[in-house]
Length: 449
Image 1 (cartoon, helix red, strand yellow):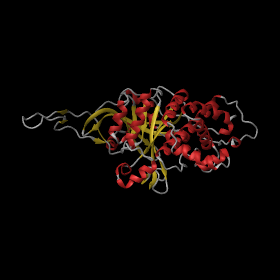
Image 2 (cartoon, one colour):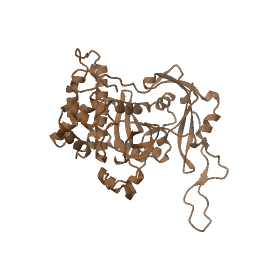
Image 3 (spheres, one colour):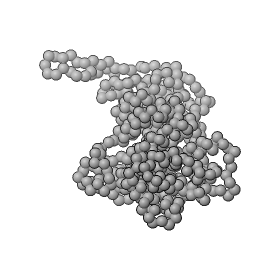
């Protein structure tokens, strides 16, 4: 059996292991929000080709931050600019088909994230978020599992990458998941044209979309990062995990209980060639090699002393006590032994619920680090919650490929605007809002992020 290593025995239940601070800000507590937003928007203004585009982006950001029951284009424009039918149509064109490059905005955004949140042990968070939709004309819409509703429903599905450090968290990038039939089925040809789906589009799984985004972030060399955390929708994909490792990152991914591992590396060899046919091209397990076991089976067989209680602070939930255990194991790759990895087990004390993770961090990684990583997915879920409840993330009514990505890009920028204000407000607690100032006069919402 691979060694547990001394690192796992460090720490105690009395040590509070912190993940990332909860971002909490009411924007009415910040003075000069209009000026703050204007200065923030000026960072990205040079990336728009025309003044009309720059003005529209500023208006859209104001609308996303406004106190409105619904933040689709028309109510946002009316709230910011008053009754102006031409302005509504112009904004619809700006979002749905505007020829501005939102990838450039996102790359500039990463530089700002590095400035305010960047850390050598920065964490890239990968997750999906779904958006219920009526009808079948929005790009990529399909009856599929919708996480927001917890059941199959007509929806669009997005894949997102976020960033977290000891300073805070935000979103970095987004991709729309397009079901296979949307890319290949002739019955969707008209809808593909109407929605502006790029002709060269091919079907890509959600892990493939996530891998694309991670690769771009890492190769940009703009943002420091060390870890990738993901749920089992991504952790159950060995190609995704190997792709993360190939980028020089350490993954900490939840995996299903039926994931198989070896507790010791089994012997393999290339079968002898018998002089006929092709030579055997790859190794095989030798006769009598131990069988891989499920991670659930490994957990069930551990003695009581293998578990240690740890206290971890996850977001707004406060300190939480859970039992942890870890073993070095060998991952399975195409029925053969793959890389040596950590199997990390987390068991809720109250309910006994077990979560299982694989992690390719080095063998001498400390227990506190592994425990912390098990609690590093909540920030991206909070980004989705705040984005949908406060910033109009799911309120869009555009149907096009371009419109979906443009909208999500500006939501990401709006989110980080509030994150940045939160960080600066914490550094300047003496700043008091003007009497009676509630943010409404600025067209900006009292927003928690």
